[in-house]
Amino acid sequence: MPIAIDPTLSVYALAARVADSSTMINHRRTMTLISYEIENAVLHDGARARIFSGFQRMSFFLPQVKRYQRLAQRAESIYVFGVPDVPLPNIPNVTYVTISPRDQFAREWFLVADAPDYASILATEELTNWDDPDDQRTFKGVWSFDDRIVSIVQEWLSSLVDARPLGEYKRDLRAQLVYMQRTTMRIASRLSKLSEQRTLQAAQTAKELELAMPPL
Image (cartoon, rainbow, N blue to C red; front, side):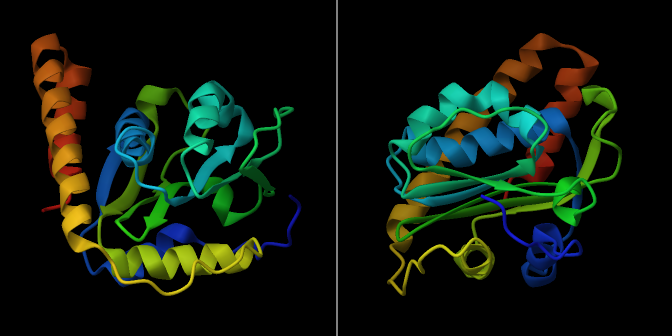
């Protein structure tokens, strides 16, 4: 889906400006774990969300194709942003949005999920380069379950890709809390497994997850 994107547009800048929260520095492996948890609310917990995923370049998306094939069957719709550096398979309910390597979007890893009963956003900007080794890549970003922030970013992105508005709806805050609790339980399990590995990388990831986890 070719669209004209202002090269200065930034999901991270918008989310961070609205969030009124401190930023965090995280490595790519931590970003992956957080992204999986946002997706798991749709894939395993049943939230029928509209999803926007920024992968920087499409070759980073390819390893997730099978997961997104399943995710697309449960989501309201999915929009994947990236520099088109590889051929991509057609996935029903997934729209690819191509960006330029010069766009600010190409420096950002983001995932936005918005539904009446679920809202979560991960918005980050890379501080390194995407060609650096994974264990050396670092990001600054925010992770939030604040439906106000999610709504603002979702509406902006929906307009950008010319998607129909989701419209106004009353948030099911009780359901949102249940999703957050399930996310917390899965992350607690992940932290326990990381602590058992007793490696420097596992310890670093565990610390980053603890710092990144939004409060209930």
